[in-house]
Length: 221
Image (tube, rainbow, N blue to C red; front, side):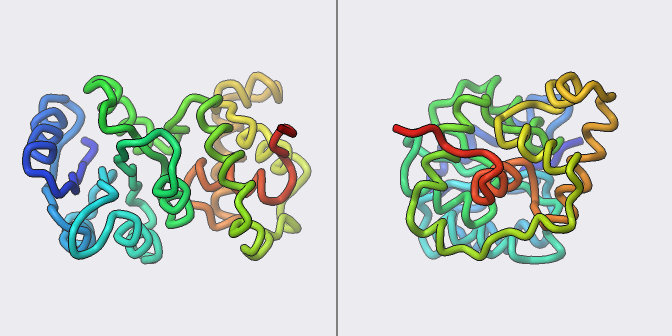
């Protein structure tokens, strides 16, 4: 059972998402939070698998709440999906920097929202490859990303760097396995080792590493 926490300052939105989550046989809502502070406290107490986090909330916004959760060593298993009104904006880039696993638009279809929760909980990519690339390309173009300490790939093998490149290009586990002519379990094992070696929470963070280290480069405009 995938446990979900819903954080949104709008009671109707919060309640609607909770009802939707509870209709799925494999999902259950473990709580609601109306502020960022409440979201952090409730997540620490309930240890959900996925937090649906609104950006604009009183007391503590969703980005700072995400940053606080993702910075805690005891919360590494908790995945955060940012809920936003806009496709690509400052909130999304800040959220990725804070450690979010991805984002969803608030007008996402109900079935797609449930699928996204399952995808993030399993550690797979949340977004379609084309959308992921567009988001990360824009993310790494920004001046502030250049000021981040470079990620050291010295401890990774040639094979692992090849896998990291394919992740950065937006390939799924199955596509990576087919490209490298290995089994799906082998591809997953490579990705698991990359997550551990690079201290990344999920695939979204691996994509950022692939771009920031130059393994994958944004196309020239």
